[in-house]
Length: 204
Ligand SMILES: [Fe+2]
Image 1 (spheres, rainbow, N blue to C red):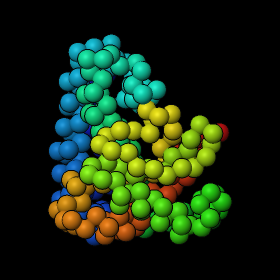
Image 2: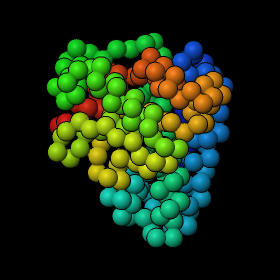
Image 3: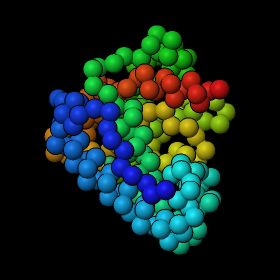
């Protein structure tokens, strides 16, 4: 198996005006493609690893991955998987979470607004490039944190449920230095149906 760039479930312009078509196109067809190519390049040094799914390479702090390609797989395998996940949790149409899922969030974070605030703050305060995450921990607790570069919650043993890419390539063309506006608009393009599915399967 060679890792391939996934097709998007939406058109490049579907997330307008919150995420502009040009950004989505470059993000997917250039940045994500480069992570894909560089992951393949690294793994081709140990081709038996192509049998593994990217998430299997990343888990347990990349325990399966030989030392000579570990940094490349952390960066490009992380970049490959994180972006595959990101496209899955985005959707046009201004979805809202179900009442049931809202209650689960409220139980953990006091209120839905506090959850939004905490997640947005994790995204805003990630210094430099990285991602903010909502995850389910092995103790089945919902948790929010940010991680630098292309580090993945999978490597820490957590199950990702929601994420936002705050690398400048994710927003700079439309928002320039205004990361805060990009984050505020992100709430309009979340695929809550997918997030809830992920939660249901993670909590089992
Ligand atoms: Fe990105």
